[in-house]
Image (tube, rainbow, N blue to C red; front, side, top):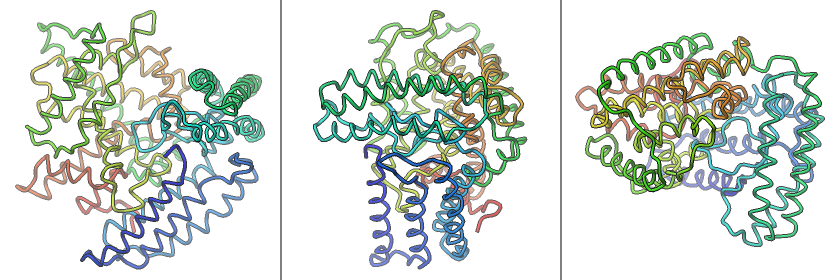
Length: 548
């Protein structure tokens, strides 16, 4: 797709045609208003994107004020529809559109990333996210360099030249847009923009000579990015305000945009509970395994490749033999192509980064987290029939479903017996959960105006076992920065897991003797990557508060 909205619009249109044609083959007739919802969805997605001025997205105060004035008209069109009599899947689609609109409403009223977060103006992304869209607020006209084939064709090189060429004008516009006082957001943005400069330079070296226009565009983008960093640094002495959205705003966003039925306070209680549970369970696990050899790191590329490929094979065999889920033809490749390659430690203390410390000790544990790649492969290979669910939701609305299952399935597979023959690997599961819960507490406390980014990082480091998450490391610094830019995401790994556990339990009670893990997992995956509360409604018939 190369980061454009063209393919997305085509998918919506084709999906609309397919849905409206479905009754001819015997499917139930969809309500007439649902066709109006799909038309509104197209209008909404077009509206949500900023106006382009000479190819540059316009996030100026005038442009954003215009959006805030005009958004109620689209919301009124949605509210004028009455979905209460629609089939349940279409009622859920209506809720999803409303949540997206509320996401933009929140951004226009509260978050305002274009005015508060200099890192919002990062445009270049060199690797695919493991969730349906970019994580956090991302500027329109972003450039996903990983979507292109290399060496670049002449056509692609010219296209990229045009796309990179807007960076200087965009960053010049940003200087007038950015007025927020948040000290942490401004400080942390310096590192984000410096990384973009380094990545631009590396990319320029990689594609040099593909097109003169691209060489020039990249050179200009590097100069503009470096100059922008200098400007940010010159503004830092004047930035001493809070960066989080506040507890009340966080609760509203969680409940009305991400459709999660908890408040800031309730989320904090649950995250602390999971943090203590994970650490206590690890202590018991370590005592149980005290006479067993500890897990050592893989030390060679050959050992790494063999262990991780074996991990994929053994994990998929486990899923099939234990009847956990129906295997699809694309699952093996979805996991195997994400194995990565061996690399030496990058720090003087010998650490590679938290998740590498897990991966380099057991080849299968993080393959369970690869449920992410199952989700993305399913979206490509078996797209949902609904045009609204076949494309990534805005505002990271999918986070509790996507991150919650990828995190939750780690512990689920441990309880199901995946690591019974490797007891020390069970310890890694508890370490992973402790890290997710500790950093979630940090994210909440930043938004609650209780802690600074540094305090959040130090807390997560202290409560992550074995010293694998140093407070000065890039992993926790980057994670807590991300959670500060995207309310709700930091807790999604653990709170989403809790929501899915509730969903599974209720699903089993509803079906009685007809329940099976395989049936649940298959039904869960087919609903789409949408909020867990919506999955629960579709599978269990439990409507969330405020649903229409």
